[in-house]
Amino acid sequence: MGSEDLHGILVALITPFTDGGHAVDEERLEEHIKHMIKAGVNGLVPGGTTGEFTAMTMDERKQLLELCVKHANGQIPVVAGIGALSTKDGVELASQAASAGAAALMVVPPFYDPVNLNQLRELMAEIHTASNLPIMYYNIPSASGLTLSPAEIAGLSEVDVKYLKDTSGNTPDFTELMFALDHKITAFNGWDTLTFYGLTAGAKGSVWGATNLIPELSMQLWEALSVKGDLKEGRELWRKIWPICKFLESHNYPSAIKTGLELLGQGTGGLRKPFALLTGAPRDELRGLLQNAGLKTVQ
Image (cartoon, rainbow, N blue to C red; front, side, top):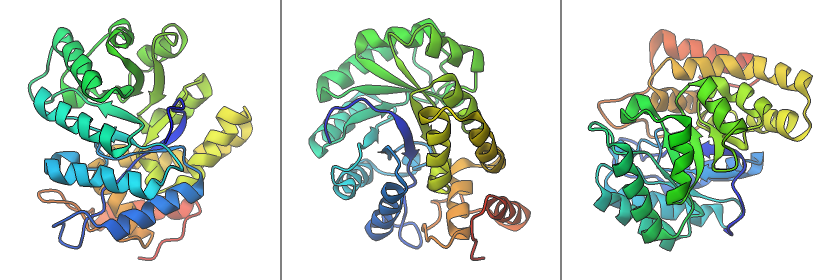
């Protein structure tokens, strides 16, 4: 894929496993990517939170990216999630992503022990040097332990960070990034229940896990708000979408996404332990939300 600017709905892609979770399931992945492309999504983002990267080996993460590039087949860009606990691993994944044909990188800071701003800037610079790919900074303070001001985030442009996925849930900061600092960094929404606000306010797009479940509705929302500027249609669509987003944020996110796909008849291989698909009342609630949004469930 070429170096066109990223925009629109980028699906934070699940990682389908074989039954039992022993390996990445290429057949399931290919079918899922075909569905996303048919629905019109603007890009794939494998290897992030929704993709369960923390439960995968380095070799599996490299394999997953190669398969995504293969099956995207140049039709839409693939943004490689390369979050790692060390610079060494991040640089290794970045180099491989460039070789595999990724269009950009999404980098979450090292988690568990948070880095400081200077260390983060050094990390981003080394990753860019190793890959020569544009970087999307994955701002998720709840997981990384690192909270940056809007000016500090925008300042990452000085070390070749071009994009932002904002999963802070901090609407005032996100607004500042979109309206006062957009000459430095391009902001994408990354907080599900803020998608309507983000697109209406003028975000260049959304990196969105819910799109795995509702790709057609996701693209209809993008078209209504960001292309046509039709608030009335956008509100009607959001009334269907918001309850699903609220549910996803209220549970383990990959568990809820994969449970939803299973309810829609799509095998996912489940999650790797200790995590598991939802059962009981939460599963029944999600089934009802999907049905209320006009989707047909199978169980």
